Image (cartoon, rainbow, N blue to C red):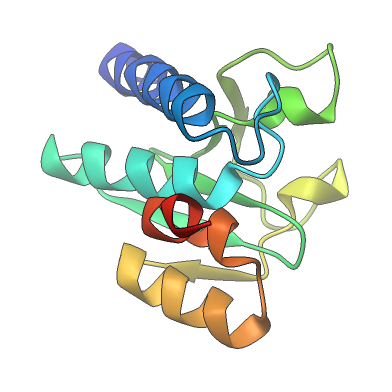
Amino acid sequence: MDKAIIDVAKQCRKWVENHAKAIDICNDPDLGGWCAIASAHLHDQLVERGFPSRIAYNSHHCFVIVGGHIVDITATQFGERYKKIHVQPLNRKVVRPERWYIGRTFGSVKGLRNYMEREGWPSEQISLEGAQAL
């Protein structure tokens, strides 16, 4: 995994932690409920720096695919065994645990948000605007 990608992921994790504290919605120190916002931010920051990425979605979780890997900056919500920046090789045939199953991918944040709204995800988990509106 490219060190520059990990550096971007670390910066994004810090950004999400700061917003979670400031907004006080889904204010879980392990970032439960922040996966879509975090993944959208990470995706935008990676693309801005020239790293093609996709936002992966399943009915329970969002994360980013970049450089042949899954990168999840909210994996800590699944327990202490996960680091703040979780990276694992992308293997579309076998994904364990199930939380990193890839149901759909999106090349844009707008596409992800539109889909999540249609699927009925809580607005505070889809965008910062939704979280701040509460």
